[in-house]
Length: 441
Image 1: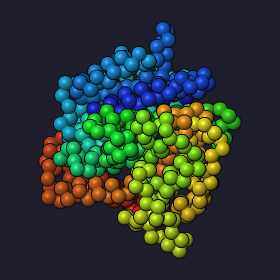
Image 2: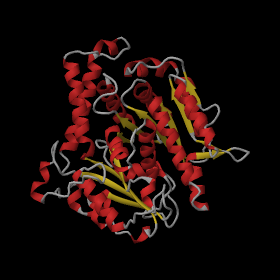
Image 3: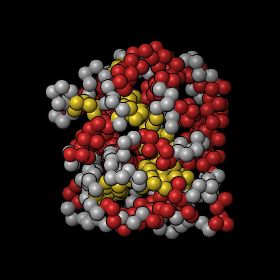
Image 4: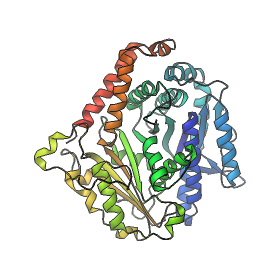
């Protein structure tokens, strides 16, 4: 089954281009695997060219032109020549401008592009909308487009991939934009997978030893982690066939309750290409590190806190914001590479890792593929519906509320139709989400 990707705003288009490049580079590993990969993310022209199943949307044309040019220059794949839409003026980093003005104004043309791409799929698995939460187009137009997708395709799966801004700040109103985006998407999306810029930046610096880190470096790491999740794999009940509906299976494995839709992702290993030839990986070692990363909410393998362990049953009710132990609702482990079927994943089936009201056999899923992914002989990716995003979410809402309490910049949103009550509704929704994740136990 095929996934239609909708790339929204500067960040969504740049990460999306890197994702298709990673996927295309990986898809040559075996005829069956490569065929499953191609059907999922690409279509072939009459001349045999690979064309991404994607729609590119931005209110400024520059990034779309760059993404299309880079794809064509790869010589392996390209975007559809008529699968993009842009204007000459952006959304000014204002969610309300994107959501209330640009989105409705260009609804018909964007819906037509998405409909056309969806109709090219023999079997549609669903949609993946890629966007940042900090700016105006990605967050505002992205939220509006997601709403249109839900209206037009009420039974299709929708996964939103969100890029969380740097904590030091990229945009003065990024916390407002983030609050409005998350509150609205929670009502529309089946699952929301979040990448934090700060975390990925540390991976580039501390693990990949990149000196002058660019957005392209950061986007590449995100793309590789996404590829590790979305590429074909064998599920527990797949009977030796690669999974057919990646979005449906991801949602059913991880978001069993509408109150819990936030997904984080981490992977192991990460190292410079020059070091791989001198390194050896074992499944017990990789999985031991990844399990402790989950428990201690360490976002990468360097600096893992080995002192954190699951609390005793009598302490289960104490999972609050700031708790050192990261409680999970559900986890999906994706293993790729040599001897993958010998990997023992029992450490992730421990009931102490999970909420008390969902048994581990329902809370934990594992997908495997013997095809190595990216440049590693063995690799593991963990997608977690847990308290991992609780701290950054709580911090973001707190910062936004402090600005709102002093009415800072609220008038900039009001002039496009987002009033104080809209902010208050969004704050209420996110406070409820924070409360729900705080009380996992």
